[in-house]
Length: 379
Image (tube, rainbow, N blue to C red; front, side):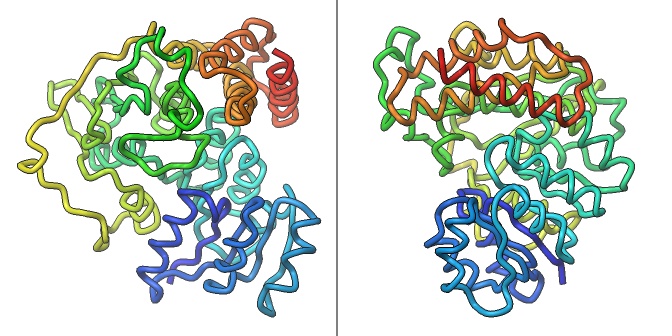
């Protein structure tokens, strides 16, 4: 039986992870469960899976939910609660499904305890890729990608020699506004932005998909996961989201991973690797689809992706500022405080004002994060 801890249990990736665990009750044991503020759903999850440790965002929420929980569940809260769930149980694998940079300390703590990481939290590698990969290497811990694109690359690299890779290419759906011009983007609403054409995702990631920040974060993450320079990482617009990503080798061969857009597939693969278990996902019929379409990425149309490549090449705290400024800007857009196009302006302004530190420690990363958020709130 595999023992799992899950942080971010009430979000899109978290609930789909529980679908996978639910499908194989004899194979998985949930040791820890952490969520943010959706305590109603969280309480139902705790009753169903009976983890040894659980955590919510604040002490107030913990006090509210404690009488509703079954006996034997140890309840925590806040950042330390995330660390308790991630690192303080008998779990073999920790699924990091929490959105944003809040997942970094818990992930580092879990790696320190020798736990394998099923990584759905892009920001962990974006903000501290050098710290996370070095610690994972030292502890002999596997970083198993959960994102569909990184899972695809991971699968396409299986059994191959890394030095024979010419390029990896991440595919992008283009998000809610892929067919709109820059002029048409001026008046889009939050409701429009949240209508992703292919994937069921949380609000923040759906907005990031529309700005292409999500793909930018994935590019930076791919650099750390697969040890490739940014010159060997490409992005291609693929509206159908059937080819999840592909690898080109130096002999001209291209290996791609295909499937229906269902996040339960890469989640399950990360939990069962190196084996493949039966999945409830709809089988792919290429005959039914008929055609697949591809377009070169337009960096003028999607400047946030261009900024991600630039930040990745600069390195250091540049990627932390890119991520933090975006998180703050997206939160403001979702609250109706700024228009859609202002997100990219805020990111670019924060980067222009930031003095980059080349190889920051954890405290320097946190300071850059705080600085970028505070600045983004004022722009």
